[in-house]
Length: 160
Image: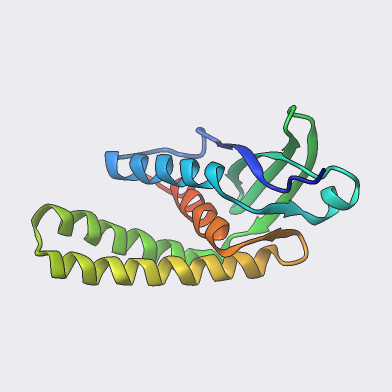
């Protein structure tokens, strides 16, 4: 019976050079939400008879996102590599708006926080659409899964 979803996700800790409490919380929430509810169907792997569930390991190497897909038992199935050049601006914008959001939470009015949060969601949504576009033909997924994966891609880009 097909079960095209991620049941385990791992980020390459060697890629993440710096974290703060806010970013660590974002990472934990994204991973928890992703595992709880996602759609993830790697097309070639699925067509080869591996119908899920999957383990996913994300890392960034040489400016590219590496998505190592394995069976639930850990058997390597496929590695997808996506160029990240088109994500540079959305990642930069997302970091900037998140920083504003974290600062606002500590010292702004609820209306100011809501305004910044709406802008943050807008940037996040645009980036998720871009990720869906880049995964087309490689992985069938849904919008909420793409949003959570984009959050994790951002975590991999944090530099001290």
